Length: 98
Image (cartoon, rainbow, N blue to C red; front, side):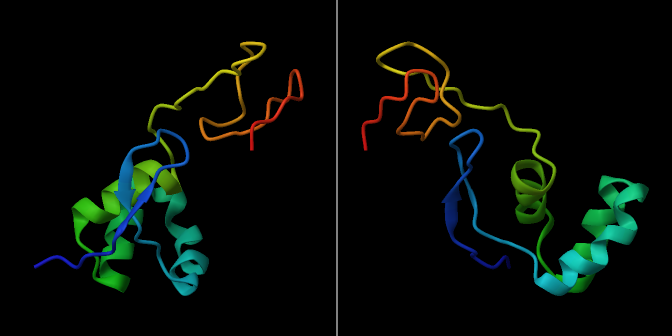
């Protein structure tokens, strides 16, 4: 049985992803395993927190080491690229639509 961590929107691609986030203790200890690769990091987090692999993989691919494709939005006034797809102000023409 898997736990339900809820959903959130990925800041990079806009996809609905898990709201899971490792604890502060896990974040502080995981640095020693980063040079061993992705599988070692995932195995240690599963060992320490008991989270299931699909949830952890989704978290890792979208938030820890993002591999998702960046969703790009453009300004309606000058057609310049916005900093994020959710931006409400253009840094090129300085218009905003809050």
